[in-house]
Figure 1 (tube, one colour):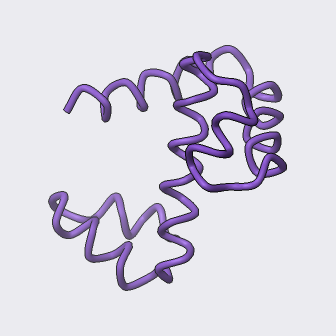
Figure 2 (cartoon, helix red, strand yellow):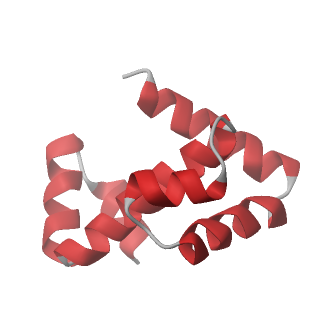
Length: 90
């Protein structure tokens, strides 16, 4: 259902508004943190401990992100990499 709300949003401002209305600040921060962890793990330039320190999250949170990436199929991982790169290049 939430995906349908996002899909029906007509522009970036509408999507941002939906996120602000539907998610708490902590949930919003958690999602952004998850993206930052995934990007750092994909980049591969830092250890998990370094990522945790830089982002101010626990090593367990980074480890869960790493385990999630490892559990993805090649297609899922490629999709995520392309999505993160597209945002990074904006």
